[in-house]
Length: 69
Image 1: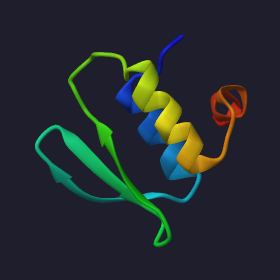
Image 2: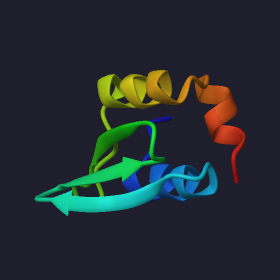
Image 3: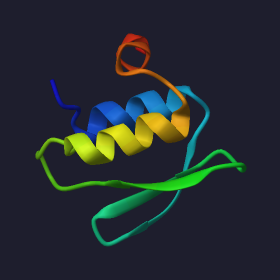
């Protein structure tokens, strides 16, 4: 099941990432070491490719990411 922006945002904030800025429909998250954009397209799901890229940056599996509440 793909993630929505709100689900990703909630989990990233719990992992210690902060919203640095927003440019258009992309929100930039950072933890002072790593900075990356996350698309915010209203109620649409995040694409599988972007989801994989985010999980790769976080060095987490999809299951581990889903377990973060």
